[in-house]
Image 1 (cartoon, rainbow over the protein chains, first blue to last red):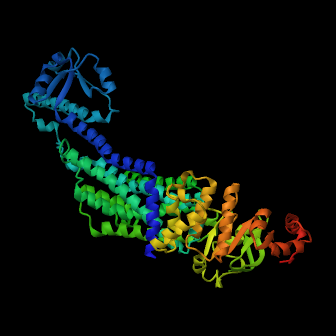
Image 2 (image 1 turned 90 degrees about the vertical axis):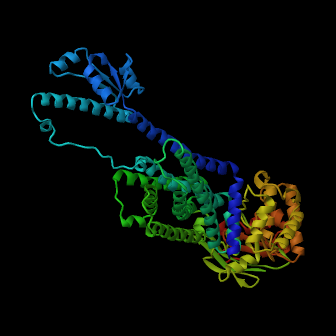
Image 3 (image 1 turned 135 degrees about the vertical axis):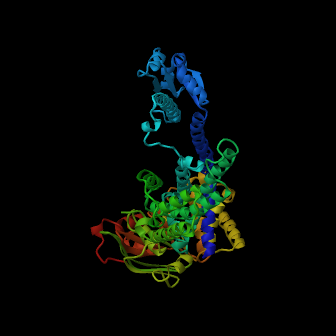
Length: 391
Length: 248
């Protein structure tokens, strides 16, 4: 019996590999995913850090505010003269924020009148927000210092003015700054087996019938379970390979990046890679079995493709729902396919330990459901209406 | 030997096969003749155990198909109505897949493929992918695939459909060789001449019922006319012309 399963398995794998174009497309797509995502996210995150790290304020009319300039110099802030068309530059994003000082600033300031400055920014640009906040903070500090000195001059304790003192302590470790990746990498890890198993799962079921090769195949003296298992193992293999290649892409990209800008942004080394593969392989068993089961109902390759893409959509919704509903981790989540894997993967990325129940419960659930789906496929292949079309 | 007794198959409210009984003996070519929709393909699918009969019994070499479908499949080689090949595999790989599924050892399999390719005259195609094959070439590969395990019983469902004269000829020759080898060949067709040229026994099926059976001569006699085609038309006439429980 195992020999027959192997025969079916090898035939499906060979058949799939002969479809060079599809195989290459899938492989290239999965190789590229990791590096591309990481480069984009890293560019984005490091951009944020760079812009905020060097203290720099762009000013227009700095000559009208010598006190402010003096304060900023003391705070080690680099002051840059803003170009004349600064408003347009802020709008198009080439400048983050500009402090515009009106002509009468110094006089009003000296006279203890309300002295105005304009902070020009465009808050629809998220990448500017660190620079905007920084400028705001510097202006507020200047304000505070001025008030402090003036109160002192009148013999009033400055602490009256500040009954609650807020000190900012950012609790996020550098790793957590890569929070986007915490969401993106598990999502790709979960979608990769869906992409990898799809073609084979459809071709081995709906494709087989559309080609007219299912009927003669089933006329062989072999129980349908042999076909179901052999085809499933082939689809599982393909899904696993594609998922592993995708994750290896992330690994390679993370290693390359670690040497450059973002040492602590993302820990995705060999240990994380191994744990990811360990979580994704059982999931791939389930996704390919589910794809086969769904495709067996498809009357044609096309129809099956439509059904299977619904499955992919449903699966990719789960991470989104988790992200937007802000669902907290709970024990029951381990028992929900995809969700359990997602939680386990996020835990791996956060550097929290992966307990055996975090890893084994989702794997056991996935494998059990996969076996049930394969058994259902075997049963359907004995069904006259499925084999000869529904009438 | 294939024996079919009172076979019936109902799909929902449609009686595809109502009552079909006949025997196809070893060393003979038996032709299942009937117009389109007469129930030939359904009957053959029940014999190759792909469909379960609603009533009646199929037995192959004395084995009950309902009881031991896998044993029956092992003794039958069937060219079914659907005869798709794997386009990305070569002809040889297509045939070998079925041989391996039937548990054939490598050397025997290689020998069998060579023998069938020479019987059906397609040796030069063996190592080409079947992608661009003509209909006749595909048919030959499909037949070789069905016969790879050298089965004692051969079922061919409309094997000459859509083939040109040369291919049809070489196919007929192959069928005769199978008969000489002592096989039981069951062959379906809706073409009178086809059956007349090849068959030792003819079973005429119309509207799911056997309306006549016997040697070509016996059929002509039963219909009361000299011309076999005329006999065919009389015997397969409209449904109400066939008396219920009529001649078997």
